[in-house]
Length: 189
Image (cartoon, rainbow, N blue to C red; front, side, top):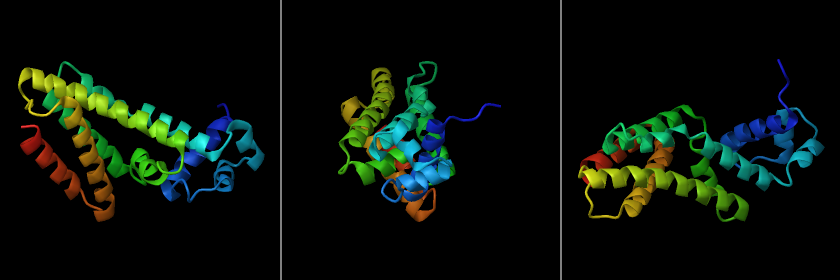
């Protein structure tokens, strides 16, 4: 079995540490110690901790395989939306530290242009997936057309992310349940 390269060890250690302690609560020394590499190795692979953080945002976004559910034409649009939100919520319940994108958005958006730009691209991609399913639902009449699909997609994603954060605080699925009830029985109905 081949040994994981140093760069990957650094990324994996940083991802775990950022989830556990946040970006600002994690030092380069914490990352290199957890990766079992000398501190100088970090700077051989990354210009800064921010550059590493931006790469982790990209990887987290790329790992969101559930986004594909939103574009599946073989399923009705409302089912796609329900499956997407339920699937993401399941992942968040199982993930220690919650949603890396939400965490980084709260912690880094005012302090790092490079991370903020990557976060914006991620939010835009996720919103685009929701917008596609909503547009399909508006076209077939299963979702009201009184709001533009782009606006509705943003509102739903914003509300969902708030529910995920509140789930962490309350240590309960109730915020997600409330989101799903309002989204599917009032907003998308």
